[in-house]
Length: 347
Image 1 (cartoon, rainbow, N blue to C red):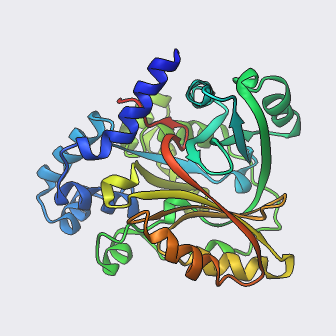
Image 2 (cartoon, rainbow, N blue to C red):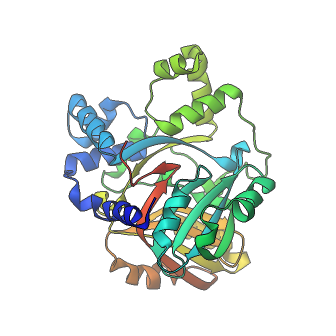
């Protein structure tokens, strides 16, 4: 892709939110699906305030426009399916958009954003093992000739994930109704020390299919995979009940009223890391938060209604964290890839 085409894609991303004609009903449908991507349409309709037919029609239209997508997401640390490495990359002057497109096209990249601040791009690489990670970062790094520097941090524990984020657009009772159970906070899990549990072949196939469309019906999955509906349903239930498979709705935060999307990079005193992580995970703007290696040992993906809110957020939220040594904020200009899916393209 040429730099000109990359710029066109980025402009489409940057201006997509104001350009799409969505209303409050659309937003409530999205908010309900964020709480439970596989919620029955009857439950979505109840909280969205429309008929089942209407909310299904709205969902279909939004998906066809590329505005949202419901996907299944595996927890890597519980399955041995891979590990995450967040990379802050600096691009050669004038080549940042070319680099962004090359990285977003890589099947090894789960998340990619163009940002401002101490980095140009934030990239989430996922690899099965150290050998594969070395290949990605040192041998076959996409656009390596366009990069001037990188800094990588390995995510070693999650405090919360985007699948658990509540948009705040629906009353608190909606989460209790739409989510089958009130999951234990990630930082209170008792299985961190256990070895990852490998997936069966069928579980891998089911997870892969749901990664493309998290609302695919069991009957459709069974036909596509060549298994009985009962075996597919059992495999899905196992993944969900073990907390291995979650569902999230991919959508630009600006469509939901969150103008500021950013990442925080925090250096916390080691003995205060758990306390700081627990506190920040409870903030309503926290979509993802994880402990990491390197000089930034607490990394988060956040949203706020307005960029001006960053002032109070920096002073009152970040500034009050226990054990804070240093902080950095990278503000998103555009997010090209969420949870393996390009967001600057329709379909």
